[in-house]
Image 1 (cartoon, protein in one colour):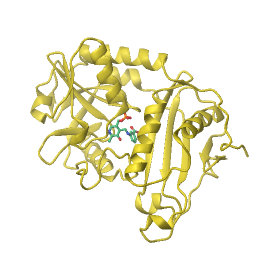
Image 2 (cartoon, protein in one colour):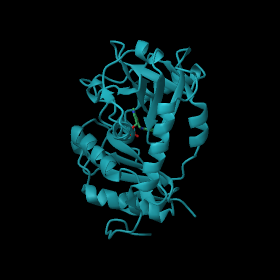
Image 3 (cartoon, protein in one colour):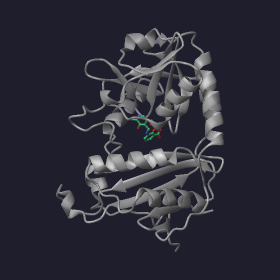
Length: 301
Ligand code: PXG
């Protein structure tokens, strides 16, 4: 089946899915995005992802040319159009076409792109083997510069962090604040588990408030554990019993080594593994069913 991409009200082929070279998303990284997962014919936390998209857009004064309900519909229809029941959806909203100046008022209409794709399932292998992480020099931007809670099209800091990790031959990059507080990884949030207590940095520290992160906190608490948002340093990571990262694409991945220090036993810990089990049960069980909703915006070609 040929891939169909939603682009400004139409489904087009991959080859036809092109934006203007005057699009401010391209020229200036002026836009926002979301990454969403579908499991077994259901979209996980669709409402939460769409809400975060609109919050990101509001923060950069970008008007998305449809409401949240319509956006949810478009995500579902894109999955249907591509016959995908298990996959990844990327929603991108750019400022749209303007001129070569910065002024967003020259961009009359935001562009909406929705791509549904299959996802490489390396879940079990990652859960079994875990990953190694190093601290990198690249930082998330300060909230006064560009608030990392905005999932914007400006991901260069994170990409540079990823490059630093790759240059060091490890999978992920740990980003810290300029004070040395642990922030997050290049595309995942981080948790440590010490004496059974789950700790993750608070969102106001300057991180993306991950949806998987929030689900993990809920799951930990529902299982009777304590889960806290707290500022901590790399010292706490090195001396934690367990460490793992969370994200829509990565799900929950054990971290077994940080900056050359073995974390805990050096194997995925029991708290992490029990959480992975609960997370899988949840993603298999709940979500918005991928069924056709009445849609006027998504006309076929
Ligand atoms: N922190 C950052 C900086 C992110 O970009 C997360 C945490 C996890 O958030 P969610 O809501 O997904 O639990 C992200 C996720 C990828 C990829 O391919 C991931 C993200 C963005 C782009 C690519 O892994 N964002």
